[in-house]
Image 1 (spheres, rainbow, N blue to C red):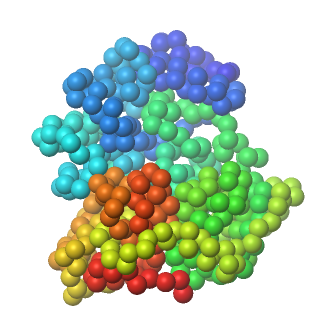
Image 2: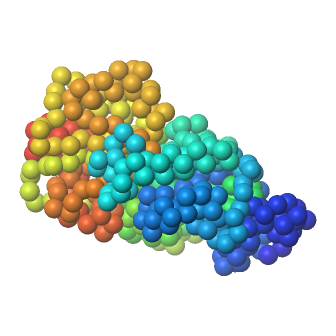
Image 3: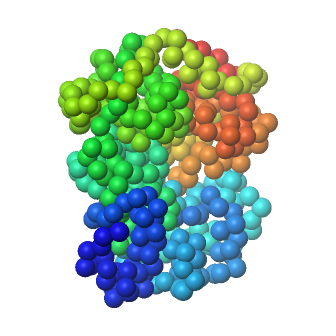
Length: 431
């Protein structure tokens, strides 16, 4: 790779051991990707390894030193690296678990509660010490981290990256724990993929014949398309409804779950698709697909794999619920009670939970028997494969089968999920 004088100083160790180790990692990463240079980034969204990797957590319990833990597990260094302050502004992805709800979270399974709590707090304190902004969410753009159009970023989380590239017009590839953290330390990321303008043009046209009328329709549109296009960049044409933030969140999340949609265009709505010619970059499309009533029905049926109408868990908040969705939940639960045999779990970030509390939504949800969970992910719940789960998120319904082994999953609207939480039975259907 061709390095600037500053980057060479980082690599040689002239700017400290932390930047040296991070740059060593990024050079190897960039060369493996075929990048020939770096680009500056001032915006990182990083997920360092916490509950996802039990072996890493077990190692921490022996190490008892956060600097040593990060050095070995993230920067791949046998030398202890002391990081004084991160170079780039960095918001945290889901960094740990909700310490008030450890009873049903996977990360705490089989661990001494006091020891595990100590580990979580130590990691949080470490992140704050080095200057990471603890947003602790998979939707940083709802909590204040909103890059400007054209800004080069290094983000983790598939739905967030898809939203960033497509809706905001920022620039990021799919970064992992290690590359994003190294970018946070150096302020650099390899110049390849979606950082390069010509790689951002769409190449597949999706003729939208079934007009999305609800949030579920946007979810099913993304889910259906992901299976068809894989790594290609879809251009959704003929969508009459103006998409909202929640609509695009669903489109981003579902398309990344079923396929690998890192970027898409919606003609006349997203910033790099004012016209079809602009979205295509003056080139011809590779192929054209259709999303009609049949495709919508097929996607819906694929997401519903349960057979028993009795529901034990209702899991919402993937991506994390913003305030408007929490408000909707509260309005649906007003004056009702969750069925004694059902657990209602709603995932969000602590900023939105605080807003929900201030506006009275939290009181209504908790009075009904629901739990609002922060700092965590729906896929971090200890739900046995035999349990029957209802959700309004295509990503949960899709990912839960292989990742969690949940074989009985109902997928439907928020209204249908709340009804299932209250009655204990699934009564959803595709309208």
